[in-house]
Image 1 (spheres, rainbow, N blue to C red):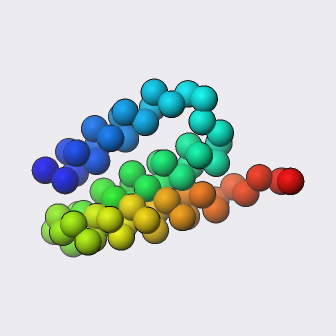
Image 2: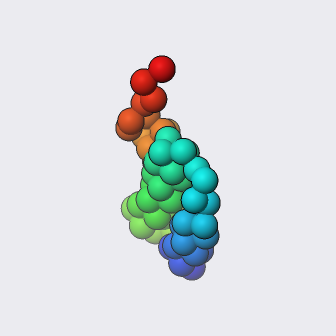
Length: 67
């Protein structure tokens, strides 16, 4: 159930075409991390949320803006 919910949320994020690359990477990382956390912990809420947080942070830091 959690994986399906996360997949639907990720598909919903594709509608945000005005996102910056960094925002998009953060959203993708959070979605992928949430799915991975859910799978690795057998669907626990804490695992899903933890995976989403870690994935979001990694996605945000992957390609830092050159300012």
